[in-house]
Image (cartoon, rainbow, N blue to C red; front, side, top):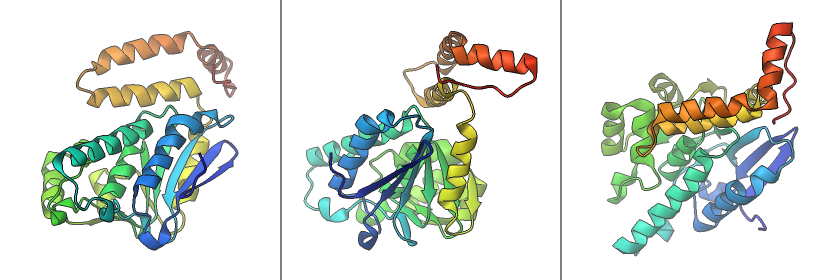
Length: 260
């Protein structure tokens, strides 16, 4: 696929993916969604020695200020369901991606933008970041997983309030509620995300992929998370990295993981 909106740079095994619709505050239109689906579903895992992905928005105002509402006008119920299902399917690709995905939130993360950030495994917020699900202002509700993930991160009581009032919260409040991992000075979001990925990149890659899988299993109704953990633990025991990690611990040296 030829990317028209996503700008992708790869350096030292870290892919920086920038949504570049700055004049539209990086709103998620159908082309953006298609490109995200292709990147996470087809291309990303083919990047040599990939450590992880940093996802951010172009400019200083917005990570993603929402979905492109011009594409919502005139939707009938069936079309609405199809649109929401497609959005959820694409965001599940991110949530279940085998390498860490970190959202570097550099401004507004509203509606679909907040949902996109929540689909990532970790979130770094710049001090000017703002989060919210304002869909009720349009007579809608979140459709890309917002009603579910917001509860997972901040709890039912506060999530219900934010979903019903459409209020925005700032970076410090997002940190206090557990929605983000760190708040950094504006402009340092990508650097902090990269720092985290560099640290994670020193760990056993197969084990990291199983952390992602088992954490997600906690929230999957059809999956017993404890059983998933038992299976993943056993799978880790079959890897060369486990043998290397155990040997390095006994020998009091740094492990040299190979990802197999």
